[in-house]
Length: 219
Image (cartoon, rainbow, N blue to C red; front, side):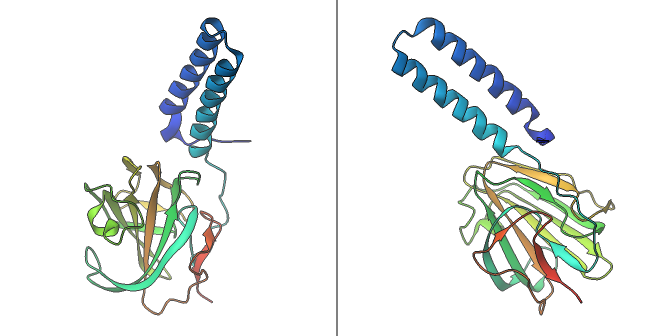
């Protein structure tokens, strides 16, 4: 059964009403069959795009402290050692996943543990793959402390189309790997910061699936 994320409820309702209205009005007032069908098909296509964007597939699997799972669907676009200046203030291994508008945009907790840090930052809307997007775009930073991995930081980053980041993580919360952690509307990326020396289970250009793809695994 197809499920939709709660963040899309209002938009889906409005889109359905608009689509039905356009279909009925064009059928009543437009006589040219080609123009009529073109407008109706475009309206239906728009509705389908909205529905697929807010879909929320059931991805819950048995949580494990031994692995870090992908928090979102998308393409691995960055794997590099960087200086993380907001929370750790030292070098970390960054893995970035870029989401296109056709990807599922639900954010899921990559590990089980306690939320030690959660902060929202207003900012710009540079394209998500821009080098400065991680520090200048609208974003949220969340740190979860896991029994095996210690503290893992993930950052939701708005892109050129994303105009709202939803973050459910609050400091002090106990969270479970794979649970709903938030949503980013219309294109974006998520960065994960792991300890230096972490052996990754993904490569550049690889497609990641939220709560299915294992980013890193400890024996």
